[in-house]
Image (cartoon, rainbow, N blue to C red; front, top):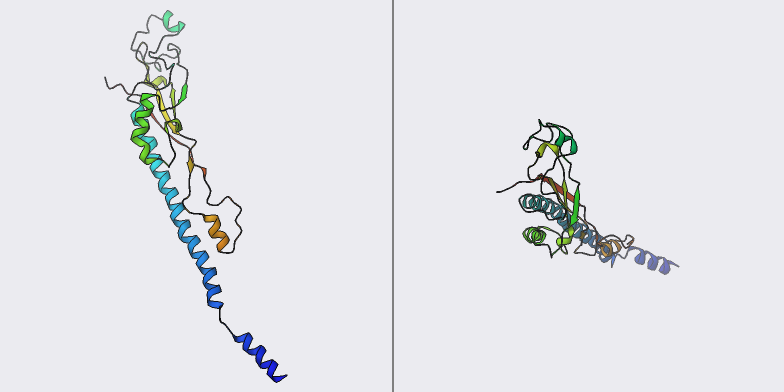
Length: 207
């Protein structure tokens, strides 16, 4: 009886292997934290770079010919403007409401086959997440009466949007969660939709 009690006590006090168990738990948490910081740091950095790319794309688009088709070349008069003899060519559209025919808002998606869109994408490609293409650029030309005059070349507000991108993690965060003793639901560490962003500037005529 005494001999059995001593054996049980010895087994109870034996700590061989506990260090390895503790190391496995702590190591899983440590690896998860390190790679989580790396990947989410990359995400923040990618977001800042994409914002810069959007601003650069907008700056390039406003000094180039319209990328979208059917953008009005000239600001035309309405019937009211034709009848009002006091309205001359060069009158600001905002000075005489109703004399300018407001051009429709035009939106299109870039493509590698469109020379202007391809040139813009080439300049900003290094700033965008992996897998981006010219088709991830969306261009919008909208009317602002304060920027336009009767009979003058149309000067729209040009908006460039970066959209439909995916962000790719470089580490299997879900596997690290499982290693740390958590539950991997299959979503952590997988690709997800990158936030869309846009920048707008008034068009300029370098001529």
